[in-house]
Amino acid sequence: MNHARTALRLPAATALAVVADLLVYAAASAAGATWQIDAPYDVNAMVVAVATAVPLLAAGTIVSAPARRLPAVRTWAAWAGFGLALVSAAMPFVVSSDLPTGLALAVMHLFDRLLQALAAG
Image 1 (cartoon, rainbow, N blue to C red):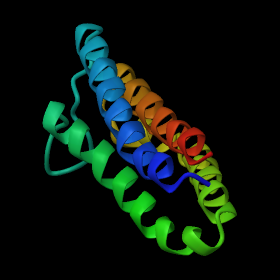
Image 2: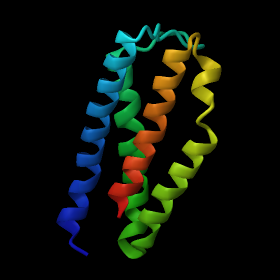
Image 3: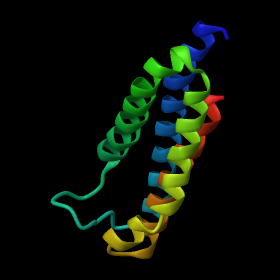
């Protein structure tokens, strides 16, 4: 496997996910999302970018060590993450105060994990 190409997949997928989530954020804001959630803060563009990039980069970094010896670990872990995202996709609707916010957060949640799974190989 080309390690240089593999090393570029994670940052590229993360950057794409951040841009996509910010586009979803802008569209949902225009559609009336309040971005108020059951948390001590409201969602804004910076929260979206950080909440997208940090988990993707952290998960990819953690998985990279065992994946050097067992490349299939990368693919298995990414698809397991997507499966977990499917199971937990209802969470944004529970913590949001309005449908546009819940829907946008769910779309971001699923898209990021799908993109991570596809980037893994």
